[in-house]
Amino acid sequence: MQLLIAGNGYLGTEVGNRALAQGWQINRCSLSGHDQTYACDLGDPDSVRLLATLIPPPDAIVHCASSGKGGSPAYQHVYYQGVKNLQQAFPHSLILFTSSSSVYGQTDGSVVTETSSAEPDRETGKILLATEELTTSHGGIVCRLSGIYGPTRSVILRKFLQGDAIIEEDGRRYLNQIHRDDAARAILHLLGLSLTKNYSHSICGEIFNTSDSQSLSQLATYQGLANFFQRPLPPSGPRDLDRKRGWTHKQVSNEKLRTTGWQPDYPSFLTAVPHIAASVL
Image (cartoon, rainbow, N blue to C red; front, side):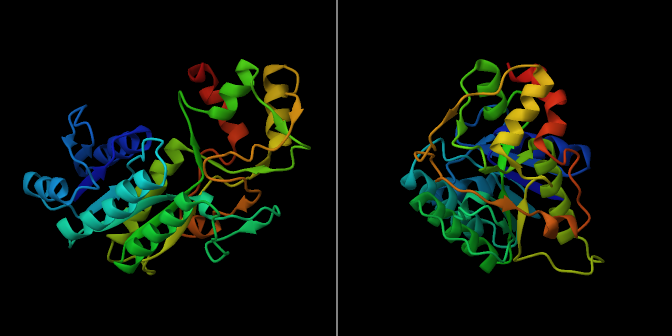
């Protein structure tokens, strides 16, 4: 099976490495062309068409490119236009688009599933939703990823260890996260099912929340870190309403993904902390 990893960053690199270990034939592209990847600007149709002449037709494509911390124009270019260009250049390939659970705008602490209302209040979230629709309408798969953490990367853990963490108000806001390795496993799991003829349910055209199994409140998260590291709790402060993807308060359910046979190796952030702490600082 041929697989194209479109975006060779923190998640894409892990997806590619695991796919190689599973016997996939891999090609990777990135904007820079570094690290033995093909240089490709996904938002430029000519660049994607050129890529199509350089690699074998992929059976599947994972779009996990980054917007480079850009705003709405970058989202439109990399995500929406990127998926559209890949669909046109590789019309017979299954595309899996990595979206974000930030498309859920709930602020009441409720449990959200794939059938819950998705009404983000930021333009970036609206572009993600449009890209999801573009993907699923062509038979692709969408993974709505919660905040990714893992080896060398955890904003929450780093802020706690550096003494920069703030508990917003009473700390009730839920944090939804997913370990990088669990996310990579989920992506390859879904691709494998979609390309397996004897799987009883079609998952093409479907959306899957890709999150760990336990949403933790901000307070519970920092209490767990304080206990593990034997440090005091961070101070309280106001809500951070300037978050790039908006301020939300919800519990992202991964039940639909788990019914396909996937289970996270790290059911919650606190179960992973002992394994990543040494690499974060």
